[in-house]
Amino acid sequence: MKRFYIFLLALVALVGCDNRTEAEKILGYQLDPMSQEVLIIAHRGDWRSAPENSLHAFQACIDAGYDMVEVDVRKTSDGVLVVMHDETVNRTTEGVGRVSEMTAAQITSLRLRNACGRVTEYDEYVPTFEQVLALCKDKVVIHLDKGYELFREVYALTEKHGMTNQVMFKTSVHPSRLKQEYPDLLGKVPYVPVLGVGGKNSSAVIKECLELKPLAIECVIGKETPELKENLQQIKDAGVKICVGSMWGSACAGHDDDRAVKNVDAAWGWIVEQGATQIMTDRPYELLKYLQANKLHR
Image 1 (cartoon, rainbow, N blue to C red):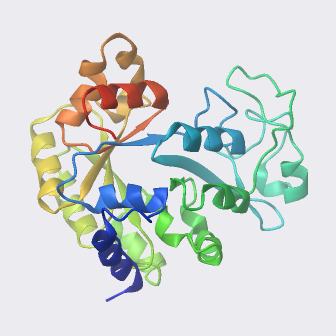
Image 2 (cartoon, rainbow, N blue to C red):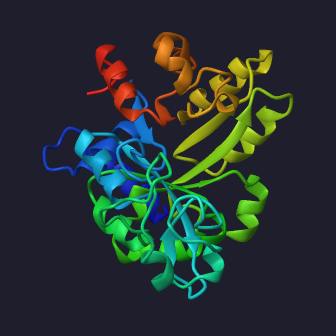
């Protein structure tokens, strides 16, 4: 049996032990098919409290007790992985330029902008992926985004830090492409496909993804359709966790974070009713309070 699945079996055996790290406890909920715990994934960190994809934003998530952080990774011209959502630094920093055409030294010297677009007056710079790994080790699970082409380089760093089991390798590429391009990583890393569900042909793609033994499936729900319920049940029957992003309506059939401001049951409540036990959100603080009030989070 491959190493990652050996780790999963060992972690299940440790559920309930007091000496587990916070990250191991979170993974324990994710692996337990009977768990009703709904895990919170903070999109780009807690960017309402600090600049997105910053060390401060990720530390805020750790301090608040959120379960996972979504992290975007790109590569500099000199081969260093940095944490940045966009292809350019223009929107989120004081600088201008493409990440791929700038050195790590140039990018990591740039101060970040806050959610209002203002350059931070304190020392908040673009972090490297290794800095984020060091910060998050044993404390919170990482959802890797914008990093498919960099999977091998990400894997090398997660192995270096002893954190491969703590990083979810997300991708929206078809399973056949994944098997062709990364056959050596399958079974070694936590695989989380991002799939559109509720479509006429969704069931076939879900079946192919399930064959690769994903740890969870991030379901993109464009709208409520007759096929949606069947698709979600197909995933649940396989014992795989369902993740839904509530950042914008096109990912959750309109039951998004903004809707939650007025009616939490019509937003996050609907997502939970679909069987989701992981919600990615831009409002992690409010989501935590909602889940705790409904005894869906510790």
